Image 1 (cartoon, rainbow, N blue to C red):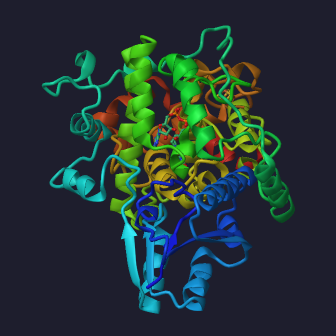
Image 2 (image 1 turned 120 degrees about the horizontal axis):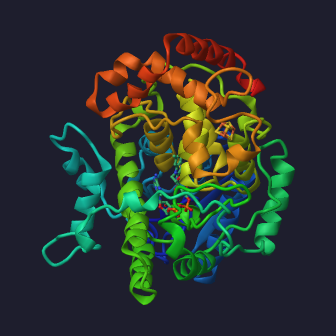
Length: 508
Ligand code: FAD
Ligand code: SF4
């Protein structure tokens, strides 16, 4: 009997677990471009265009290989409703798919299968090093879930940067301390730009469609140059390891105006759509390490992001959903300032990070964590509103990776389930790591008053407000130590000024 093989927009690998099961004689592939899905999350136009274009390219490859396929373009139905219609129309009793990267969709597909009484084979996504079961086993009996120990296990288990005895290459597991430098005073100098791809015919058609269908959605399509198929993703990977990886480590945390990509790989969207497999990315990095005699600290730093963080947050997502989406440890309730959607703010750092996000659908990790994320935490914004923004606005955003990073890491919304303390910083950190403050009307070192940097004011206000909690733990005690150097009178001014800011966030 016929089986339907559902391929979702972020499962674009010809060797994917579900496609491997396809019987060319009897089965059929099913793909849906759902307008509803793109609207369910108020997405950046470039994110919608990337998904649709990559899906159409993938469908073209499948057709060229003679796969039987039904591809539904631009349906107003949701993915699940379109799937239901297809299963019913063709009277199909068996469905195969890879587990979706979004908990909601996984539940909906399971519900549909039971409602229609069809058999569902949901394969685990093998584009990850760690299976769900392995992650659950690792968490068993642990009081604290920390990236570092998980990462070491992954290194050993997959024999990556370890010697024959299982010791870390270079005698150290982690070279993070070497990877936190700002750019030189004069700026990053010549950065080798990443490879960017001119939109081909399919992409141009999709771009025109997105402009017509989602004119009010945020973001621009003018700079759309993302890899949309496997060949382009491989080219981007090869270029990165050959020319850009060498400077990735040192300047990983650095920020500079008009430098949207720095030395980052911008491979996340290709990895998340499964145009690339993380195993081949790590293999390419290890080959480049030897071939170009790269620093171990750079290579380790990059591998930690993929083998460590990427795997870790995925494990946490499936472990903690659905609760993770509702977590609100501090009980924050404020609305997201309007300028998150148009970049119109006087704060130079936020303007730059949001501006490039609207232009490209991209910002690098420190911009997401320590600029837009830090502000959202200090400004006491409702976590789910912040998560909606991150899910909407980045081309690489899929819930399994966006939510733990935003709710868990940036907002501390789960009370530190996998981070030891909130990632908060004052304007001084942004001043050290960027050139933003030089062109800002606010002053990073001023704590209250007209010229005060809102981030600095809100930082001290946050520490004053949560002083007791911070002092109760040895991990956070140091953060409040500096409060002792601020007089009670000045602390009063900070709190008063912070109140003023918090009630007028849209005016910043
Ligand atoms: P690089 O800096 O070149 O890093 C290499 C790769 O490592 C990335 O491509 C990515 O696959 C992986 N990686 C690095 N850091 C992380 C991390 N913290 N979690 C998971 N993988 C990581 N990443 C997404 O892919 N999708 C998201 O929706 C997303 N949302 C985020 C939201 C917040 C608030 C924060 C703080 C981080 C978020 N990240 C997300 C993680 C990270 O910022 C991006 O993966 C990274 O900026 C992508 O750019 P890049 O490919 O140039 O990464
Ligand atoms: Fe950002 Fe404050 Fe610096 Fe302005 S002064 S750029 S708001 S950190």
